[in-house]
Image 1 (tube, rainbow over the protein chains, first blue to last red):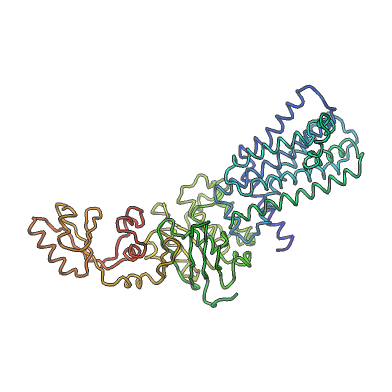
Image 2 (image 1 turned 120 degrees about the vertical axis):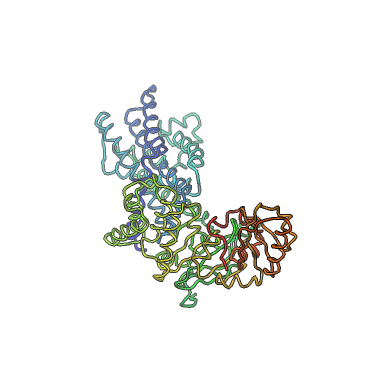
Length: 249
Length: 328
């Protein structure tokens, strides 16, 4: 199948998912309410980081929760209702189906994050904003989160089966990736554990978003962010594909 | 690998194992172009697993499935364009309207927009859903959802249709519509592969049937020829007033089964059995209300080959109340 046809089919699936699953309570709760609630709690608490870092934190949270949540809702629901068979029986490859699911997550989380930013930035200040880089950072972060959500939900038949383990991993990642405070401060009590942060793709999302908002200050790190996020998208997508394919045997 | 040009569907040593359990065991089967084929079997016999392997939803442990001579695992996208599949569960998107469902599936099959609109309209009319086309499928009854699922499988004009238990649990209206549509499609040359556990449905619709039991294909032929294979076993259906006990009737010989207010007496010599029965009725003071001699039915073949008893067949609802036996 040509790339154009693959993309066309993926978009058809994504469009259907948008129509079908965006209004599901689980999508709205985990994808919209929860990140905003966390941000609210974050703002209401005692400020322990600078304002720019708080903007970075909420942006990363929005990309991460939105992207992972939509995938965690869509695939188990499709499997439970048997509608996934509709897609598998059509002349569409499994890779295209998963791409379509990723795009559905992307079209959910990407605009929400941009909306959040467009509300916050005028109040918080624009610092040395690099808008183009910010859009790329948000896009890559959302795609990485979508692929992670797919990898988790690839073989699940129930939303709860995905949400509980995924929430565990998500909160672990959020804490250790430096979403709430810079990783130097998180690991100040035990610097030897800092390597954990560098194993988490979210760390690179946070850094890329940070540099795009406050100004590029480390090109090497920025290039690393870009490479790691691309790698994480491919790796999570590959895991999702393998796990899904296993359910067909 | 190519197979005969007239073969639409072929299973070659098709086997599916789950650990030590074998769901389908070395199935060999050819369904010819334009044929209406029925795969009969009790629940858990391996019907759905067979369909899932033939349609590429499940990878066989051994063997291969060929559609129009092409191995579905090797060229799945090409083969899937030729097929329309209606799984056991009506897997339509209930959040979408009937119209949206059909156009979405049409897009997946690359049906041009104008043709898809025309075909969707035609199918919704045929299945009696046109007036409800803008209603979400969530508001549909089970029968309407089933009809919509079948319409969705037909949106791209497939050459082959697989249906897994298409009328199971449906109302009379939906069942009639579906059966009529399937007959019409088959007349137009569409190859139909249908699984069912309704024996009368297979008998009435299918040109050839296979009976599968515990993963093995135990019979494969035309319904009438299958009935002949079990030979001279005939039966007498009799209604008596007052209704006697089974024990009372057993003295006439043969197996006796009660079915509602009637009894069926299986015998190789209906004439002699009937004489004994009338004699017994005189002796006991019974009034014989009706008597019919019945030829072997597909149900009898099914019972014999699957090892189920006639009582099991009724208990498992393998026959519909209206579709019992063919009268001689």
